[in-house]
Image (tube, rainbow, N blue to C red; front, top):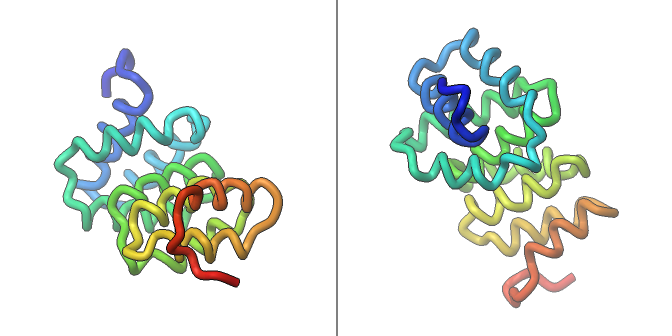
Length: 152
């Protein structure tokens, strides 16, 4: 990995490498590396960078889920949610709703739901109903301009 690369590019390089290997030792290395970065600073660039890669979606999704199910550090889990937003699908809805109910992760989960679910507005609306404070604000902001969310 090139130490002169922008953080999102360096992380995407590592994610691409780990997704191909898929073993416990490399997952731990990835987890610790992701935890070093403030998720909010790299999330959008990382998602953009991952979309340009030819990482099989199933491998990226599997890696993201393993990070989410085993992660112990907030930034690593938040960036795992970003990865799931790139490669996830309808099967990930409940996990994203669960993690999104933690206020620190709501923003990432709302974006991931919007990017990975067929009925994105309903998924984000459901998340908004589960949270308060800034979590709800983040979710409701993602619903701006929509008329598809269910009515209470």
